[in-house]
Image 1 (cartoon, rainbow, N blue to C red):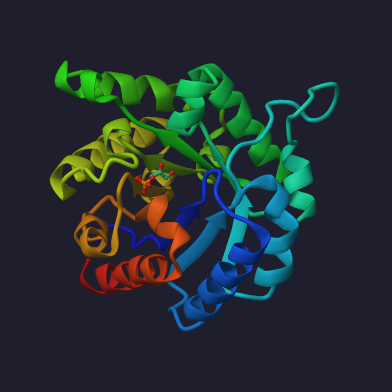
Image 2: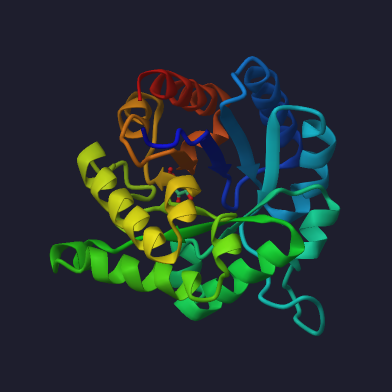
Length: 260
Ligand code: 13P
């Protein structure tokens, strides 16, 4: 029987939040997550200025926290950048790297994303490596070649041991913030492809690495997605800003765990 991986639901707040709103949201998520079974992990990736607030409000709760990007450098004259070690000082567990918004708006290359992944690992963070194709690429039949290139750039930089410690999020660019979700079958097909790519690195990574789906995940589509064989949870944008929706998605992970 295939190894049962833990489910994971992580919120990506993107550039949203204000101290007062965050307080309400974090307290509600922390309280709601308290009753979730251990087999479902929960996290939120907040804007860096709110890391200290997340640490204060989530410490000792079931909810981990993290950042949405890290610098490729350890320290130095890199104005505006945030080092992975700085996030670790505020108790962060996760760092999203290579989100499509950073690849598109900040021209991050696959090579840079790979360096950031390694940096996050070296600092003790779990990188959530995002991959995904645009609508044009999908329609041109390039989904696997684009995603293969993105993930291979990362995997070639990692030892088999390090490969085991990453999380990968498949986020089709055309499904992000658009309300258009990939069907469960479309998402599963790419996740199976990613697992096969991991297997080329190590069987242990293929069996153990948590693969998230992201792109318009909502309470009403989450369970169907999370039930798929190779989908271990979600990276949630818009719905992570509403505690009722985010917690409902966490509950969908619990329900999917029960039937998978
Ligand atoms: P939405 O859930 O808002 O589509 O965003 C997905 C995403 O980009 C998460 O990283």
